[in-house]
Image (cartoon, rainbow, N blue to C red):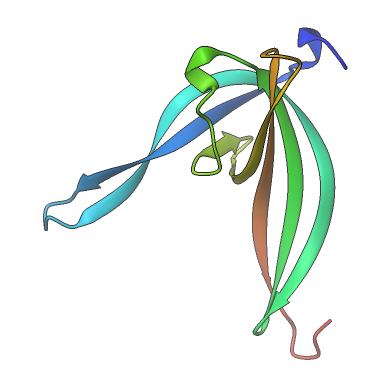
Length: 117
């Protein structure tokens, strides 16, 4: 396990909040919960085929320092990093309140060609 020196990326953890717009409709907004240093590790890439589209998914593991304000991070939250949004799919405490390992997926949609290639 690497130490804190390997936390070389700035990420922002976003939490959904609900508010009302001018038409009294409920609107979901993403509000920054915290901006922290993280280590980013690419885990896997995969493709899922659905009705005339190819969805490429890349699973990324972000490791951050554990802290009391961040212990509530869950799959309801998101990560913004390097110009992309990542949906959190899992959070695991590692090293007895030393680290949080956050597994997240960035999804890029690519239109499928007619021949399916």
